[in-house]
Figure 1 (cartoon, rainbow, N blue to C red):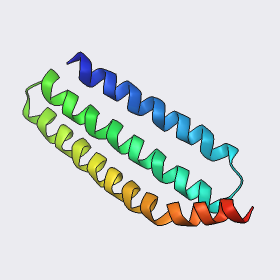
Figure 2: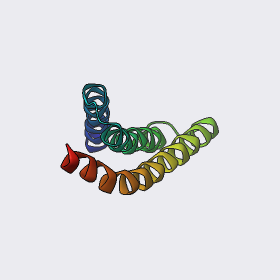
Figure 3: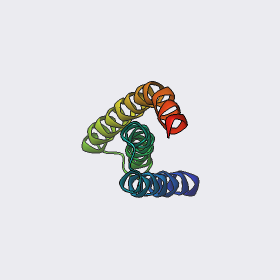
Figure 4: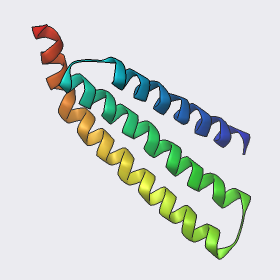
Length: 98
């Protein structure tokens, strides 16, 4: 599945981008907001990696490990979305006050 590998690489690149951006910013609410976006990217990387494993190998151990990766990725994505929605207005307000 070359398209899946491409999405894995893109999500990893977004995670690295947001992590670098996190260290460059100074405002605390904006840091949390960027961290939430990084969490979404990391969660998508983990979930897509688990889905990719399902296509590569067909053993019981692979199914268990892939299920753990997918579940962990989905939890990371939903946690990141929740944090993103919470910190977005705070980051906007923080930027406007600067």
